[in-house]
Structure formats: structure tokens, C-alpha cells
Length: 216
Image 1 (cartoon, rainbow, N blue to C red):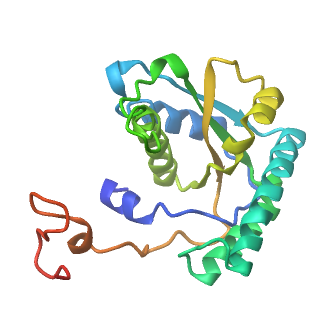
Image 2: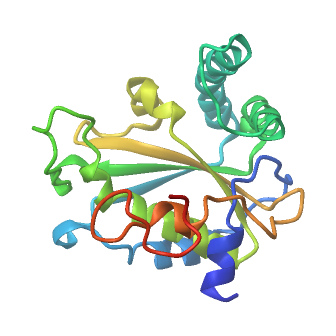
């Protein structure tokens, strides 16, 4: 599979088949993923592959109340969701069937391997993720190339202490995401909806369009 095709068709999967994902498929994907860029080549990322039914159920039990609160907020108008109604419905199905996903990969990162440079700016600190999430995206692309689908969620990061206890995550590591992994029950998307390049690319200063066709 060409890289461009993989990037354009690695959408969030909400419906998975029950077929297990072989160890060799996971190994190949993680092997490729580990070459993602990271600050100082510290390689902070670690993976926990959760396939045990009881552990998956425990993660699902932690996930569902948070999703239900978010879902209720959408219905009440207190939470703004820009997603299409079908996307929200699919996400609701995913939340209620998380325990049935063949595997949940928990993305962990060693704190000492992160170097956030934006902690004193008086806003949300995100820079530390630059040494984590490129590896995660590599994983999703590498799995897509093997016909395996993924769904990335960060809801469970809000209950990290419980996840830490459940999965024996050491205190010097954080949880950065949970990735549902499995063969898709439906076809991979052929066209994902994304904002056009003309609307997100600027020339020299923010808001000054670089490419023709951008709104004034």
C-alpha cells in the first residue's frame, strides 16, 4: 500500500470483527512505529497489549461512564460536537462494545523521556506529546497497511490512576492514549472529510492565505 493511500484511509474504526489480530501483525506494526521522531531519541514510548477479556471489560467499564456524560452533554447542548450525527452514533456504539474489540493497545510514555518546553506559557501544555504521538500515528498507518483498523481514544487518560493499577503501569510512566485494534467489520473509508489545504495554510503570517481559493 502506498503511504499516501494509507494516510488518506486511516480513519477511526468503530465496528470491529471478532477475529484476533496475530502477534506477528502487531509485532510488524510496532516495529515500524518505533521509528517515529522523538526528542533526543529518548524513546519514551511503551506499549501494553490488552487482550484478556476481563481486563478489556475493566477498561470498558471505566470508559463508558465518561462517554455517557459526554454523549448526554451533546444531547443537552452543553457539549459542542462538530461531528456529524452518524459519527456520534457510531462513537456511541464503539463505547458500548469496547470490551469486544480484539485488542486495546495502551500507549505509555516514560516521563523522564519527555521534554515539554511550553509549561510556563500560561496555557495548555502539549509539546511533550511530540515525542509520543508520531509513534502512535506510525502504528496506525502500519496496521492499516496490513488491513487492520484502529480507533484512538484519550478518554481513559482521565482515569489514569485506575488504569495504572489495573495494568501495573509504573509511577514514572504516563498513559497517553488507548488504541482499539482489530479487523474492520466494514470497509475502510475511501474518502475522509477534512478541511481543505487552502483554509489551513498561511503565508508568512497567520490568516494570510498561501494558496489560491482560500477565503478572504
